Length: 472
Image (cartoon, rainbow, N blue to C red):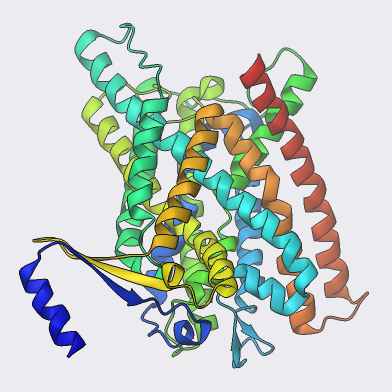
């Protein structure tokens, strides 16, 4: 009778909010149908990996030079692959192949395998990581919006026209409003369409940036750049720039923090571990190829004067319509990537709140919003308030620090070591019961220590660059 009454109301009122209980219980969620496959996982990974970081790679290679630049990208690609290989085993526990327990997220894997204290520390780094990604994506998208206006201005008024459009805050707020709407997507399972679009966009602008750079190399008739990289006035200045370049490259690669969430969308047959290994290999090889092209061709085209953002720094003015299209692709991709990286944080925070108030109808009730012509939307008061507040916080920080290269460097150095290096290695030791002082144990410990120093060096240099940019 209730269902019939609701259907009658649907016919009478075209715009209606209907309450319905949200299946937030982990037991219910674990029985949701898994529909993902190798190619949906590849799309999610590419959406997460090829992002704002690719735009700064030409500048990064310019600071490192022709040998160290491409070699550093290959090293970070190898680190990303190793991290992915270690984390793939953490989805099922204790047996990575047929373990009865499935960990739905990176944080849950740390909690189950390493314990609550490790999870508490990990949660701090994870939340900082999601926050910094949102900040970088907001800055990059706003910069691309401004670049479209400047590109058209330069085309119609000349390359020396004062096409500044300095008020980038407006574009950040616009991007934030879009994210408030998209943040109402309930979970990862309902985001496949957004990831597919975002992955296609990332391929598009990475290809356009590479092609424009290659065209400039052909036009110049020479390959610019040197083995030493961009010259500086002092040695310490060179060291700081190298540190920022390492942070930018580190930011461009890892997707470790969302790997387990992606693995959780896969069908159980064939085993998720097998599918995820194939997807990771394909995605990392693909992104590394694009990164080498973007970084290498960009440096070859501009040499030491490579812009910090290859598509918005106006190394290219024409064809203006292609540059506009590339920036539209960047904005579209980052709209999706923002959500891919925010969904795990939303799930974590909302899970904590619903766990404390399991019987609250305000928190657990789901409302169906039926809009004529358009589709049906599901709204939840907790989701609406919490996610909107988070987007506002991210937008506010981005407005305060709108410095692309410096923020990207800090973002790369801040959480790279704990989330991509330390926790995956520690979980692998427990999962595989690796004995101390064995060859594998020594090698992974050495790897952890070396990467700690690299990450600290990158972080300190990037923070110095951010302070210099902010306060002169």
